[in-house]
Every structure is written in C-alpha cells, then in structure tokens.
Length: 561
Image (cartoon, rainbow, N blue to C red; front, side, top):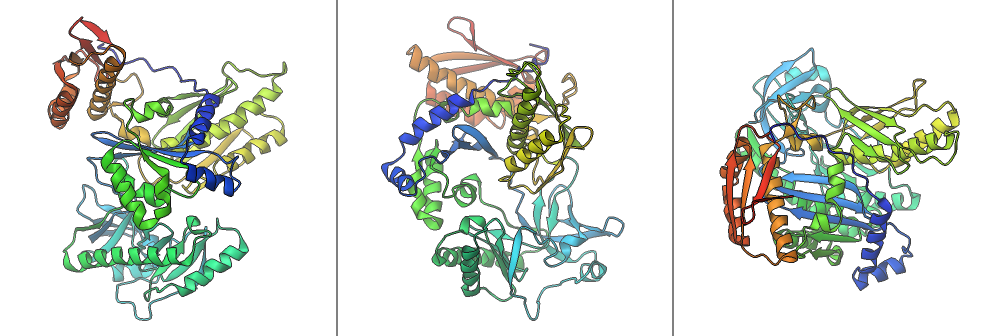
C-alpha cells in the first residue's frame, strides 16, 4: 500500500444500455408530463434528467440525456462561490504595459482588471443583438470613455465596483470587469450598460419581433440594460415583468451595501447549485429532476415556485436506499472524467493530457472493430466518434484555453470536412465561448474554449512529489469523502444482503487523511456512527500512499472491497 495506486484501466460504458434504462424511466414519468409530451408531439424527443446528489462536503448535479452524462457540476460546500460575485474594491496599482489595474477586493490575491473591461459596454457579446438604447443622461458614477481616460478616472487608491468573471486559477488572481450583470430566469440585468438586446440563438423572426416589443414595454430604470435569454423564447410578457422585478430588488440590495460599506467589501454572490439549477438548468426540455436530500428538495421547490411554478411537477424526492448516482449509473460515467484514456464505441480511444498551457488530445486506433479490410471506413468512423466524445469530455471536465486534437490521419479532404462539421455540431450547445479551426495539413484541429473556473480534476487532486509523473494526487478531503462514501455503501450493502445491523470497521490510511477525518470532518464521522450503529477505528501509517486506504471488518479480519 506504500506505492502509488496503479492508473485504472479505461471504463467501457455501454451507452445502448444507458439509453434503454432511460427510456424505461421516461415511461414512468408523472401522467401530466407524459400527456404534455404527447400533446406537443414529443414522443421521439430525447429524455433529459437532472440528478442532484448532496453529501457532507459536496453537492453534485448531473445532466443526463437518454441516460448519458452530458453535463456535470460540483459545488464544494466549504468554499465560496466566486464567479459572478460582486465586490467593492480599491485600485492598488495601474500597469500601463499590461493595460490593466490590480484591485484589492479583500481576497488572497488582488483582482486583475483589464483596461478594456473598465470601459462601459466594452465587452459586448456578439451573440447578442442590441435593439434598444437606454443611456443615462447624466451619469452619476465615474466612467472612462477610452483607455487613455482610465488613469484619470480610476487613480491608485480610488474605489471601484467589480464583478468576477474568471475565478483564481493557480497563481493567477481572479479576473474582473466593471460591467456588472445579474442573470435571472429569462433576463440578464446590466445596471450600468444602458443597452437592451436579444440572444441571437432565438432565430424565428416573428418571435424576435415580439420580444423587441416586450423590451420596449418593460419598466426599465434610466441607464439600465437587459438581455432576453434564449430560455425566454415563447414566454408570455408577464414572465419578463416578474423576472425584472426580482432582479431590480436584488440590485437595490447590492446598491444599499455599496453605499454603506467601506472597501474592500463583499456585495453579492451567485446562488448555490440548487438556485442555479432552478434558474439555468431547469428549462422546458428537462423532463425530470431527482433530488436525494430533503432540504435541497424543499429549497428547489421553493425557488421554482417564485420563478417557474409549472416546473414543480418535474421535481421528485429520491429516497431509495441505494445512492442516487449509482442508481442511475452516473458514478461510473463521472469516474471516466478523471481518466487519461476514454474508449470509443468502435474500439478506438482518445488520450487526454491537461497542462497549464494547453490540453492535448490524441485519437488512437486501439483495438478497433472496423467493418472493412482496408480500414478506410474505420478511420472516418473513429474520428467522428472522437469528435463527439471530445466535445462531451471538454464540457464534463471543464477544459479550457487552447485544445489541440491529433486525429487519425485522413488524406481525403471530404472526410476531414465531415469530422470538422461533426465537431461544430457537437459543440453547438456548449455554453462556453469557443472557436474551432478546420483540420490542418498536419492532421491537427485547434479549438479555443473559454473557461471561467478551474477544471474538474483540480478540485479532486493536489500537487504531489511522489505521483509517478502525474503531478497530482487526491486531496485529503477527496480521500475523506471517498472513505465516508465507501463506508456508507458498505453498511447499506451488508444490511440489504446479509442483514447485519451492528458493524465494527477499522480503516488503515495515511496520516494526512486521518488528520482530515479527525479534524474538520470529525463531526461527520460521529454522525455516521450514530446513524448506522457503527464502530469506526483508524490506524495511520506513513508507509501508506496518500490516496490509499483499506477497510477491515473486525468481526472476521477480512478486507472489504
């Protein structure tokens, strides 16, 4: 146990089985939802689910489409939610060479603020069509009309209100903007923009004309701007009025703090993952939401009641004995997102390497199942499968920056175009801004993808001096969560299969994991023992690798796997 764990073999996941299981669940939807689908002629529509799992230290939300994991978000309950947070800060210094200001917002590192992000409306999104101007006639806040005005408008020591657009990653401080925005269910309120627009993803001309009329009727305050989100398509005008009212109330609370508190001051943070699920993820095309914690279920219902009451019927409380992510085959699919190799249906594979500068992805033939002796059909088939899987894995792993994909060589230009087209369609629904270049003469495809937060792997692993070249090992918290999860699953299994009620278990582990269990997580262990009638003991040894642990049933001295 003193050696690092062997890199696990890639998991083969039969997606056909996942689809069949999802279709069976679709038949068990509430009658009202099935009638709706029938009325809308959606009988062949993909079955989409949200699965929400909450444990002592983490909350996880999985977005499933026909049983296949398409989106995955993690909220660490002992960490602040930084992206979208608004602070009142103080300009510490201006770097003319970088064209950036550094702002003290009371965090570990000063926030980075590019000069372009200090100009009103400078970060306009090309995916938004501006249809109305609502400029403030006499602006009552300091503004710079051009980059040259910034040193005069925001001298060192001056107070400034900023919003985090990109969380701290590694040694880099958080990136911020002065162009604040507050997302709602159907609208985004921009208190200082003065520009009103509509998402270009809404393509129907008649619908766009209707939404333009709605924008003209909304009771906007002078100088404020709004954007109608894609989810607002086909929604009645009263929904937008209600959403704007909620957002203005929220802004009034922020402004009151802004005027009463000295810098640096925290003014606002985005809702937790339950609130974000209700606001952003629970769209009309979601068929079912399952939540495994009663408090979260009640909070979700309460939030939905305020913003979208009709969606309440989609939400159910999951109270089965088996863990929810295992029940719906989510856990195995999440495990895949931490592996270097991912298998493709045809027998090929992709190998993913994440570095600080870029992400490299290699497409290999593996043990392919091509149906032609010359292999031509397989090469195109494997590359198309790889394009679809790479798009999915980038979303699941939250990969960003420059992504380089080395496809299997294709001489035929037509085949290269097919792979490029497939990649564009696979990433069409990706909410992160991205740009895809055609396959080059070297057989390389380049993709840039915006990332607002750290990748998923960074929350589970931390730097390690003895990791056989990986550069990362699981953190004590991740090991603690894993041990608690494994012990809980063991107890449930023994109760169901062997009828055992009282168990005495001993855990052998590394001292760093024991310090976490005996320190910050001690109350969770006490609760675990009380709830399940357990007796837990621990023995730590430096010879154990930080990721390794062993659980022994003391009644027979056997290791439990």
